[in-house]
Image (cartoon, rainbow, N blue to C red; front, side, top):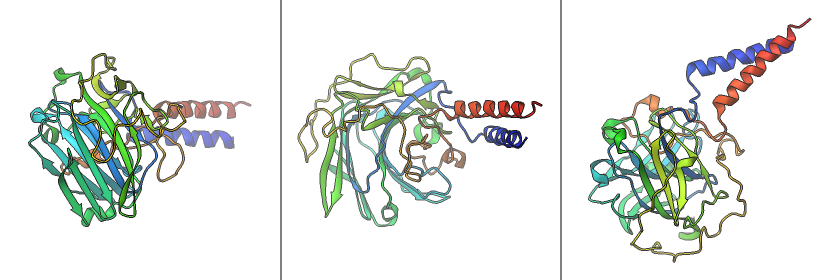
Amino acid sequence: MRRGVFSLKLFTLLASIIGAGWLTPAQAKPYKGAEIFVADPQLYGKFVIRMQAAKGSGVISNFFLWKDGSEMESIFWEEVDVEVFGKNNATSWQSNIITGLGSKDYSEDVHGDGNFADQYHTFTIEWTPNQVRWLVDGKVARTTAGGQAGDLVSPAQVRLNFWPPDNTAWVGPWNDNILPLHMFVNWVELYSYSNGQFELEWRDDFDYFDNGRWGKADWTFAENRADFSPNNAIVKNGYLILAMTREGQEGYNGTPPTDNGPIASSSTARSSSSSAASSNQTQSSIAVSSSSQAQSSSVTVASSLPASSSSSADSGVSLGAFNLWGLTWLLMLWAVAKVSKSRKP
């Protein structure tokens, strides 16, 4: 009977978790976006992306630094963002730092006068102790020294995503007639920082998708109208494509627009495909939790939420590589079986 009582308690606990809405099923929404991430976090550095954002009201194309676990109530939130708005013909983008425990501090700054969906641009985040700089095409757009920049003290992951926030005041009204949409990336560079200098660690030209470096998200969260689908992160013709589609229409069959601008950042020449790539080519969409340092189903809120977002959106829980919804039901069925077995004479 003891095992039966324990199983019954487990069943009750799992049922209460589901009933409270703490777990959000993956692959449950009518729209599909995309996110990729580098699981290995890094403290300080320079992070560069050459990208063409998507044009359309209600969507954002993002490149950001994220301390894994920041969405958890007991973890101090640390995040640095580049977020390109699709609204108004994708002519503006937002820089932001988010920090805090419980309540969060935002430092949103909107930058205009661009054509970010008509051609490729180079966005750079330079993160050093007590300072963050944002650059576009080699020109400094913003510098934050001290204050929130001094609160960024934990290693962070590089993440890219493309999603439709359920927040009209922030990103504009949503109309799914604009689908499909695409965010295009030519290359990404990551530099370490030591003794006042940046040093190139790797560059990815996306001649193939490096499963040893990048993971693909398959989760969602409260403010996201879409799920992140691995099938909407595609490499083709030397470009990474993050797609936004209707459910059942994932993928990309077009031809990425050609980048006619510089093929390298100001500090490096174009290297071979996925330079310094890891030898591990095993597909992995499991993020390494900074709190546990073990592979687990990652929970994350993808990209920043604006200061005007509701608290329910901030606390949206998402699912990692393992579909915890299905795992939960398997555990519940196991618990029922244990209860039944324990009652046999």
